[in-house]
Length: 251
Ligand SMILES: NC(=O)c1ccc[n+]([C@@H]2O[C@H](COP(=O)([O-])OP(=O)(O)OC[C@H]3O[C@@H](n4cnc5c(N)ncnc54)[C@H](OP(=O)(O)O)[C@@H]3O)[C@@H](O)[C@H]2O)c1
Image (cartoon, rainbow, N blue to C red; front, side, top):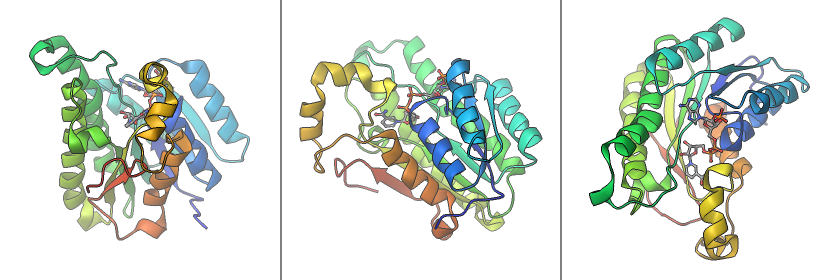
């Protein structure tokens, strides 16, 4: 039903987790995909090879997108390899695992989280906004933490709150070009990012705290992202789509 043949997509942080699941689903819908990653070359190349085996064009490119140079080189590579850009998913991010109260967060942690989760989204989105085709789609991955805050991870919550606000600003700026900009805000997702707290708290305890009674898989997040990338979502822009099993009910 979702046909993205002929569309050219860039997904950041697609060597694993939510980004890899999104890249796979975009390819299943027929899109050509550039996979961005930072360090895990073997994982990224494996995902790219998997996509190519389904008949689409797929490439993987390493770049630290928390820097302007890295972000712009990734977007430039996507345009060069794919011939342009129609779909952009800003998914890469970090979640500093250590619990630290606001009074003890040091400057290094604060600035690093902002660089990884906010600067990266700004630098890539700015470069993409300059060249994305008319009718294009941008999806920025935020978090429930950006909606309701996250005690002892205030840096992370603030960074994702910034992504949510940025989504709305960019949506209004790009609307005249028929480019939609939305955010998907996941709750708990079973990926490497949160493997440690999941092991500590126990998956059963976490599942029990979620109204739908289960922890999301990466594919549970990829589906709504691809929906927002599709023609089915052409009249949705500036929206924050919570994908959290009912954990946080706000828009
Ligand atoms: N998992 C959750 O429970 C959860 C909940 C809410 C929101 N989210 C958000 O969802 C997104 C994806 O999360 P995930 O769980 O799939 O993460 P993950 O499994 O830790 O994967 C992170 C991805 O981002 C890439 N990356 C990180 N920093 C980068 C940088 N500076 N430059 C380029 N690439 C970078 C990594 O590349 P390498 O593989 O090369 O290191 C990897 O591909 C993040 O924005 C996260 O905040 C996750």
